[in-house]
Image (tube, rainbow over all chains, first blue to last red; front, side, top):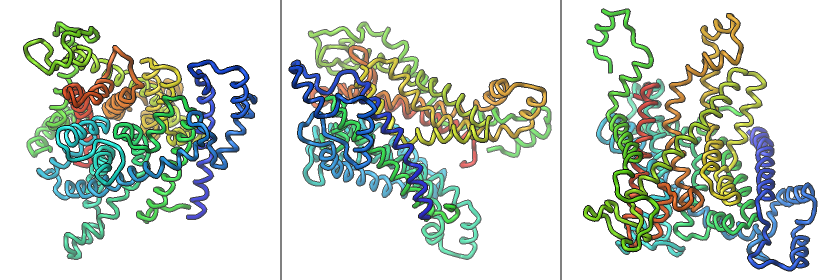
Length: 305
Length: 297
């Protein structure tokens, strides 16, 4: 298991290296430099600035420097916010995004799994159709549609929830719903399909034949197996939550990483944008590894040799 | 599904067997949700194509005499107007043209790349397959959406770039699915027969493998189109998609969200269009998949 984890970590290096190279190439290929202000800077000032950020060096040297810094988890200075490093920005934005994303994922699992299992246990009956139509609606209404509609309903027409910003738990209700609903719908569909399959399997039939109660069969025998596809969905789900947070944070004015990313892209703060992309890339790689290890723990048929 | 009467009928008429395809078609026809979605989607497509001509307005003319008009039956602004006095009925349909067009074209791009890549990898097998699929694995881990956002910021927003960018990142799933199917097909006797009769690998892939992938590919197309539409709307919502005065559903939703306190119809109309279209595509894709692979029934 340990050697598997190590091998997976090694395997992640080419991925991250390509990611970093792509990021670097795009950053340099982008038209316009970070110091092209509306007002032309004096040549000497510009030269000094470029020297300070090592922009006057040959490209391969800059690439090497960037690689070296990122290997030390140093994403460099932000071009937009002077005297603030990208690390500072990530450190201030990530906890907020993590809270939002974690709550959304929890919401998706806590509601999605029961919805899917209930639908599966009442297959082809009204409860099933209702649950699956709900799930389909959840998948079909994008989060950036759901969010403004909720604001319209809960903040503009009725003064129930704050429309944006960060304060108490009330500020999280709409963002979490907006971010988690599609995920919940996917989880419900997955757990429905896998529960149906598991309930037909031989070992569940055996458990029933032994005379176990229906509840025990479902909770002890069927649930862990029915959850495995949901677990493997967590990898893509995390990636989806990360991209979703970009737009949700912008809509609700939440000062997380996603909003930094959009602001950075619009302000051409290349180091910030690349830092966020790389950080998210690493996060996704790490998360996928954790999910795969969890998968093996849940499903004894999976081995890591 | 098949009643006794069916079986007897088939038994008495052995020369008329049911192919996999007609079987699937029957199952699809029994799926009322998918059929209703197909009808609704057809209606939306026709409306989007024909609709703008039915209105006396066009999508870009600004009319400061009629701004913020709520939906009304009398003044021919059936869905109201925006802050520049542009007619929302025409703009919503015009936006639909762009959204659907992008969905179609980008899906085609990803289809061509994905099928070519997946079929090649699957048919070649061995080390070539290993390397090609490893590349797909690596690309999978890339946060492409971020790169597309960056592309849009750096190189301006043009529709062609949107097509190519979305198509170019969406082919990975297609390549995986096609490769898996090709691996299975390769073992079939008719491929062996084609090889024996001296067909070149290229001809075998093109003439014998690709046509047999059509079922899977059809399912996948109906599931990719809504993804692409969603993705374009996402970009447009961030202000990075199509540019004014051209519009798409995502761009309209963004404009509507900015003004929803004053003119909620600007948000609700495009939101409903987008959601209903995605809903239909997803139901059709689901129905097709169940019809072709009925193990979960």
